[in-house]
Length: 388
Image (cartoon, helix red, strand yellow):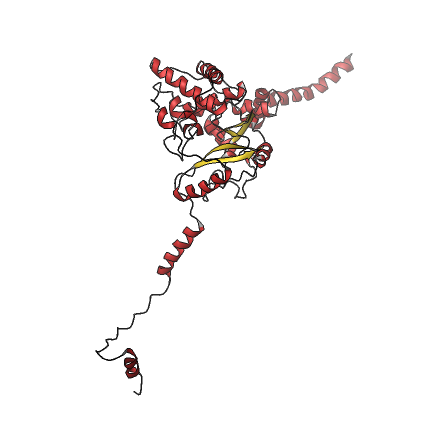
């Protein structure tokens, strides 16, 4: 018993020392990296996939998210059209030429090869629809119904809801008008600026089919009542799958519904916090008779190519058609607005004019020879020779 007591007494300093080390370790501040790792683990619940990534980015403000995306290697995608990587953010060469191919199948393949950026899908908030007057309500409902009908009459219900969502997202986007009719008819007064092709290609002159119009109207009413198309989130752009517009690589592709592919802005501009513009409540009066008159009528793809060339020289836009499964389909308005791209002939003419200033100064011309009456020019030449 005495030996056991002495043995415990001898070991007491070691136990006390270990206990002291443990106490000291527990009182030492944890490294910052440990606290961050624990916060990430708690927030994502151990899921480091797309769902966990969304849980983290949803807590960021726009500036934090923009900084994070700037250093995200996943954002570095191969450039298209043979242009320098990064052209979609800044280009000095203008818009690349669109080549749809003979059938539109090339564009379909290219669109299908572009992966969905589902990690950037953010569900938009319900639209707050507060029109100022009953007339404003009527105008807004009609414009939204027109957008759904003329853009997606034969699309599935989810596709029609997605188109309505894009229109309402734009109303809240500071880059667009703050009314529903303003967004739908934005640029319709110019052939080069139609945001929705039906507002400038004469489609409004065609009376809508009754049952299809009522279906589109129901979709519009649900959207104005707060229905949200979660599948497209904060999308502000879309196009048909048989075309590949120049702007598609500049945005995040979210998903495809029916024949339409939907996109959102890249970075902070596509986050819900960026959709801060308030709906004005006062809808503009649309002169539908004016916008029902087609500005451009093109029957075939060959005529479209010819018109494109002519319009490019004038800085205008025209309708473009493609042949798909033996049928001619309208692609939409090719926007060539702003300063047009110089043609090779333009550049040659400019260089020729500039060469006048770059070349040597012309020599002083000799004084004119005055010929006396009755003397021939040959005689003057002979007199002027040395030794004559």
